[in-house]
Length: 380
Ligand SMILES: Cc1cc2nc3c(=O)[nH]c(=O)nc-3n(C[C@H](O)[C@H](O)[C@H](O)COP(=O)(O)OP(=O)(O)OC[C@H]3O[C@@H](n4cnc5c(N)ncnc54)[C@H](O)[C@@H]3O)c2cc1C
Image (tube, rainbow, N blue to C red; front, side, top):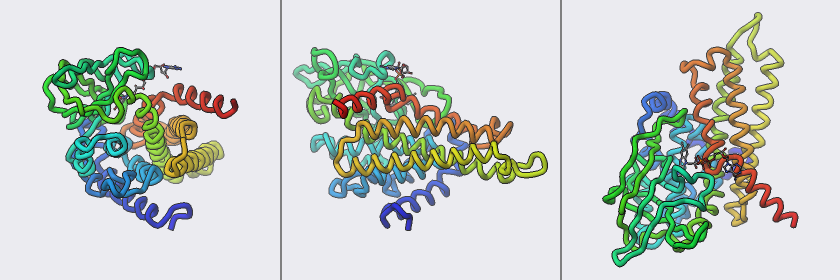
């Protein structure tokens, strides 16, 4: 048994690792090259029960909490950052709907867990990213329900999503107290999906803009409190930031393993480059920072599962892990020399994929703002 995991957590880690190595790893390069969503792998993760890993047992999940989600996430990301990214979406959607949804909305949870209903979350807009409270999509109430107009940007799985969680302005009041989240059928008339974005990395996630032109939704399409979605989203971010941290951690772990394997076999000046102190120091720093990040993530996840507020800890884990992952994936590429710059080696893909983690789920500049604000509160 793993020193810090329960038996169930150890089993989850081993099962996920086996699936990731057997099913994901052999397909990861092709997904990157073709930039097409792999439905079979998505279904494979669902069949393994992974989408319900953090969901309470009485809601149909495995009840393994944020710590379980982070353990699974690291293993998936160790074999493909993009597939791991796809895993995060249904996990978070099921939790969000279970926590805030009405009975009709909760009825879609089994379909999400089974991989039959692909969800997507659309907060960001072309002109409103970090400034979530400024978003402009409008849902107007009339006698027939809601009438929604606006444009959403960068929607992960947007091209294949069956259910959309759309953040829109539902009151004339300005700022963050006028935003609701509406659950829409992806096939609703008036919804148009743009072409898939051509991205540096994280290919195969059907990331696109979504335009809503006079889209109709019933009054009970609002998830949770009307005009209360900003607060709900911010709370949800605490969980999703841990997921993104574990995703970056998995990619850093993969880069580390590749760097060590390469350094042990690549010979220069009559011996393996692993014998060179410059290389050893890079490996030693990688190993240390990866261990530190894992502890930060698991500590924050355990706090979250214990019901504690983790706004600071989640932001710290996200900031530290994604910055360290970028730095060390780059160092691992350096250890590969010229080969690191070639598509022949997966470190090239890891280098492109991991970059995103510093940008989304709140940029790392925004994480610093959150940390500073929490520190100020604590020290008041
Ligand atoms: C591949 C990909 C997938 C995504 N998936 C989704 C998704 O599924 N759903 C969704 O809703 N969104 C998604 N996003 C959007 C993502 O969350 C935003 O890109 C991110 O929040 C940053 O917003 P922005 O791109 O508008 O940058 P901006 O907010 O315009 O920021 C630009 C720069 O200014 C800095 N900045 C902005 N405000 C401040 C401030 N107050 N203090 C200091 N610095 C600041 C930022 O840190 C950044 O460096 C995705 C993005 C990408 C690239």
